[in-house]
Amino acid sequence: MRTKSNSTQVLYFTLTAYFDTGLFKYLYFISVMSLYMFTVDSNVLLIVVICVNRSLHEPMYMFLCSLFVNELYGSTGLFPFLLLQILSDVHTVSAPLCFLQVYCLCVYGSVEFFILGVMSYLAICYPLQYNTRMTCCKVVVITAFMWFYSTLTTAVVICLSASLQLCGNIIHRVYCHNSILNLICSDTPVNNVLGYLFSLFLGLMLLIIYSYMRILKVCFSGSKQTRQKAVSTCAPHLASLINFSFGYFFDVLQSWFDMSRVPNIFCIFLSLYYITCQPLFNPLIYSLKVSKICSLCKSYL
Image (cartoon, rainbow, N blue to C red; front, side, top):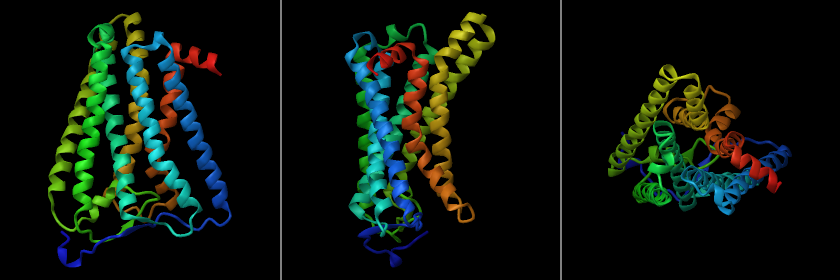
């Protein structure tokens, strides 16, 4: 355990995952900028389509709208910072700005997991009673709770962390990552808060697993038509959840294990995957799967 003897007041952090790319940095800048613009355009388009069409003012589409808003939030928390760092020759960031980015990305991950969990449970366990069980008022309350809880708990953790002494200022990533909490010199109340948050996410994961056990039971015991409807209902949620969990899982692995023997470019890809690919993946999978959104999107293009 680190002690206070080697603690310092950290004013800035150094991002060590960057390497000299020469003139190729402009190519990387254009590529990342294009990715960001495509992410913004696709999510904004679906948000507008859902908001302006009364036929889509149903609980499922309201949750989807909140999901797309969260994708915009997470992308904006990463891409502008990433674009500035790509063009910069010195990859340092002030401590307040670094903690702000950690806060934004942690809120994004928390809200994403909440929404996917709620959508999976309601759409899978109660597909036929979805609209009767879930009114628009309930959707608003649940959505407000997810955002309020995620922003509040994350703010508490970040504020406690920012006020403590750190034993280093090196972050082995291309952006400010929540592994910054590992730099705290000693055991603190932050650890208790993180343990509580982990228990909450574990509970959500158990809820999701229970939901898919229910759908598997339907698939094995129901008629062919029932199985097709069940699979059609849960397929987008399952695909989105697997994609997000896959990216987040490998991101966590990098915080737990020594990745010095792994190629740097591969580590960068894994650390960025769940923040960059999920905002692109969700609009694609839901616009293709949900016929109403797909047809309305075509009319706007």
